[in-house]
Length: 120
Image (cartoon, rainbow, N blue to C red; front, side):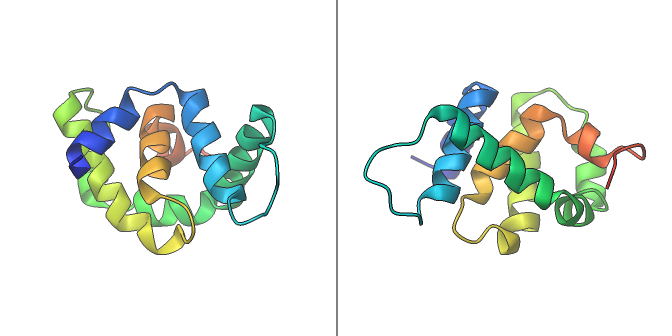
């Protein structure tokens, strides 16, 4: 599967499933014999995003390309926007997929992260 196809595939997922996927990635380093309840994965993912919000905002929101394209709803533009965000955040996503994080941020609304009113 190409990178573009992977991004499009993730864009088709429900937001809850993206949180579950991210939570699984975060918790994958912890050994556990049985899977956690899905709410634990969701909580872990939301906590990671909250803990990293300042860094995400600093890396993403100042980028001119992101500013220019963050309001587009065309799938092609969203894929390119996600690709740009992946490049911007890959250094801070150790042990987790920056692709999942970028798709989740775009689906949740990159505008809310980058708005002047967003709490940092």
